Length: 83
Image (cartoon, rainbow, N blue to C red):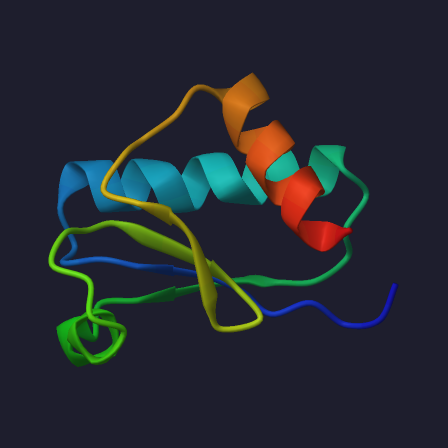
């Protein structure tokens, strides 16, 4: 697996920050060595045609929108989208 761009984009709210922190934990547990980025550039979300945050993107593709899943669910979502 090559480099993966993992980014949480949000408004800076508690849910956005919590998703970022949880994503960092999950990425480590999945042995992914890429850095998780955090952005509060709402224009990125709007340009994707999305109207809610937080947004989790993998290689600039939104894979999670507007929710904060539990750790196991987030692992499933990231793992499934890495294949």
